[in-house]
Length: 554
Image 1 (cartoon, rainbow, N blue to C red):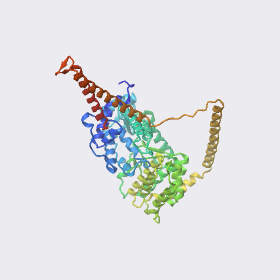
Image 2: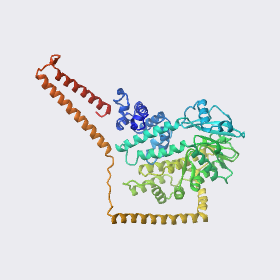
Image 3: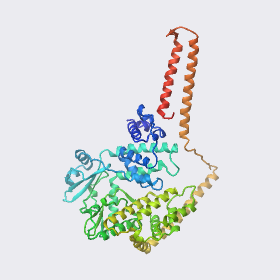
Image 4: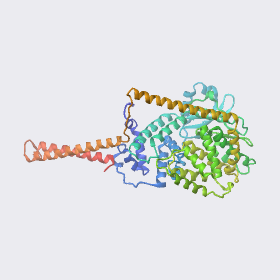
């Protein structure tokens, strides 16, 4: 297909499918807002259904995303981490999105592997299970045996998935631009920014080399810890589309009963491992649910599935540690300052109301013993608080909240007396020890000196540039209008319809005058020219009515 065609026409069939799924699930109001009526069959363009709100709206959106397939499911999962811009009921629904689909036929996978690995497929892999171990929208896994008789797991991408997701991302970008032009969301939700963030995320997920690098980094971070591990990656036979790694043999945490002799140790080990990842390493497994963690020995745990990870800068690590300290010790002013440093405040931010609401949250836990505090409940309160005050936070901030909450749930499944807050309080001393190491103090001081020097250099450079332009009489101020494209488009449509209406009216008046003349030739006992004028006016009028119904604005 000609790639110079407008995006609407290049992917007409997919647009039509999206529009019909929206109508089927009771979200027809979105059709008119984004002007998708032209992609619907005419009989479906008149939508009389009621617009859902609240929880029902969130449920309908989740059902639509699930039905639309891989890219939209992944988008929903990304949105579930943005508790700063979406309400809790929406976040809860997005977390229900399941990325599970039937596996591809083995013949299709094998053909793909032969093309991807070439001679290595026969040389390196001596056995492969035809039945998939697990299947998701982007890829599926098979057990394999390598030529050195090592048991391994092979993760292979679904053939053609890159193209499908590329089409959907292009459509998402177009719809996001339209949504912004029409101001369909409040100022805190920026559709195009969200889609750009999703585009980067899905690009990383489609490249298995990225997941391979994540595993290698994780193994390196815990190389000195005999109790934490991850699968070895066989990079020499892995590609961007195929990832082959050591098979982890053990028991998944979800299958461990509470009578396991080392449950208490493992629960604390998992929580401390996560805190070390976040607050010391700055790199953490963002999806540590019980299916992604194995017990491989009496006291050893192994993490798998590194498709979703979080990264935290050294500065933010210090702030996260301070945030955790403030939460545990109920230091309201510290907690407020950390959130405001990490986040971006709205223009109408009310600091006094912010402080009062923060105090209300912490008052709920006042006088409560640490062992009786659930960090998941605290985080849920904090997320809603951030949403209410419209403070935009980094995505990794909420990935961290979710990871700690999941870690707490896993720990309590293993040991009913487990409390992640108490473990965190004990871990604070380890963080302080790490921060107070001489080499790290010197490193931080050096970084701050460099930042100061860089800012001075940037300021001098900008000042010189301004002075030079003033001296050369080349100083200009540019103004740019925003969000007027939609208005111009609507004015064009209105003016065209008015012009059409005037033409139709003129034809009717002119034809009426001709009929009064009784001129020849005649048809049906009226002048032929008058008959032609009436007919033409009727056709144009019908076309005008159809275009109005197609637009959905009547």
